[in-house]
Image (cartoon, rainbow, N blue to C red; front, side):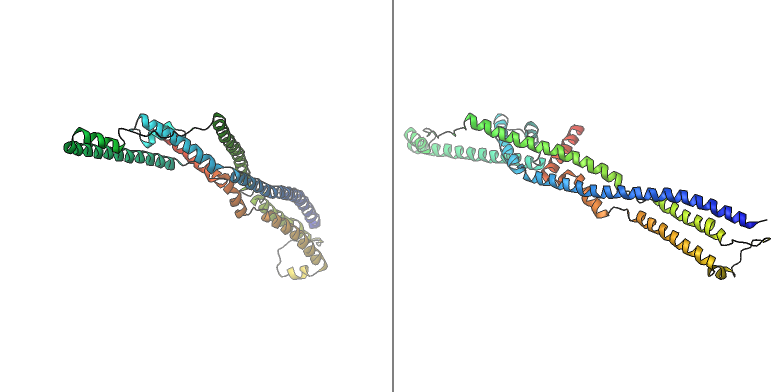
Length: 329
């Protein structure tokens, strides 16, 4: 049997397989590298856009809007307590429309302080009236009706001096005030819509990149098998050629060095080193296409609305509490 024909056919077939798979794998790596570059640039653009939205949120007058709206609701709370003093702070909060950017617990605490202040004022007024009644009774017992009349005049209970009422703002001023509040609320809501859209964009992007799809373990295994097929199916059979006829093939370790340092062996080793170096280079390219965990975490922080503004986080928490209360009731 002519083994030269067998080794030649084997090395040619293996070389064809190595070429097909190698070309496909290298093309895939280069395609992944281009996609990795685009996504790396996308990381920077998404983070820059998120920082811009964060700056826009910091420029909104959240504190001004919350303070004025809360003051307006506290005035309404006074009116409600005038009608029904038995309302609890939770009942008042349910009837009023506090800004969502004010924490629920802070609003309820403020309403409770209003109730406590009214209770303290009512108690002080009750004690004052009781004290004046006691004083009038003492004067009546000493001086009769004239003393009681004199006591009433001195205390001011019978003759009150009308105080100048608080003049309300003009209608134009009130309308302008509410228009400014409404304008600020519209700006806050519009920015929230934009932020939430950007948060969804970031979430989808991180879902597609967090597993490092460009750095594929399958490609590493494929490169390893191509290298093994090249050495076993191409280089090793060529090391036997040309073989004498007739010749019986046998695995001989003692003749390895003679073949390796022959002209034929040096050429095969040189070709092997070049090919394996190329595969190693592409393997390292595949390995390095991994996104930085710090970069992923930094961008992931912008999937939480509280990163843009704590007021948005307060509104989200208030909404969650309201859902829980509605569910329990």
